[in-house]
Image (cartoon, rainbow, N blue to C red; front, top):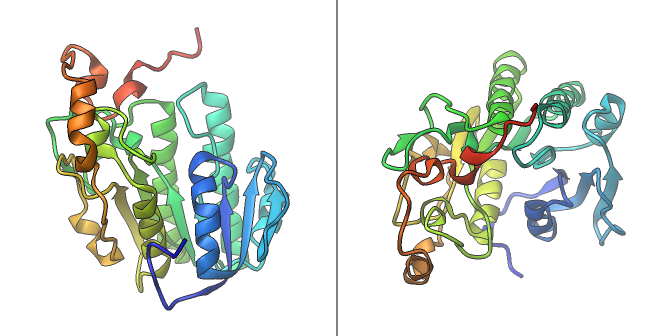
Length: 274
């Protein structure tokens, strides 16, 4: 498969964390086109390394292992962590403590750029009849969203204090095709996911930036104008499936919080301490 985002820039070694997860499996074969060596990491088994790959099984909670994982890396695509709503303790360890370990390792090894998988759930309590930009205040829809808001703020601190650039990707719904009416607004194709990540890796100046990971959908809740400097131009659209999705889901229950708010079904999750 040719790269979805051709570029003349090439990295010596990229690190992809969370490589065994859903989006990690999408990006793993694609990112190899942009680097000489691709280091992939996860807590789950990753199989044998392909040509040009290095495989490391690392828990983000282990600072020594994370420090070793960052050695010799030019840039990081960080998808690792707890990826759904759930109890606070595993979210705390993977998404908060683990992310701190990642940035400390980046600082010590002189890694200058991170592409951080944040989430649309940082702003999930905005309504579906609102259009927000990347400067809107966080309104997390759960503990997972809270952890991603923390991650965006941690990245901001490490840029201001240490100059580590981060592009925070508030990823929408990256699936092969949109599955429901909500995804007509939140859908991010896999090719556009690749375009987004590579744009953030290769932009001349990133600073600390936030961008919504979304394709060129006709229904829009998120305005990326403040992230135009990253050069991301989506090419795909959920509109190709609009008629099929609307026929499958012709009626919406407007009393359902998941229908009223941008976070969708995350509005139904928890509590987890009862």
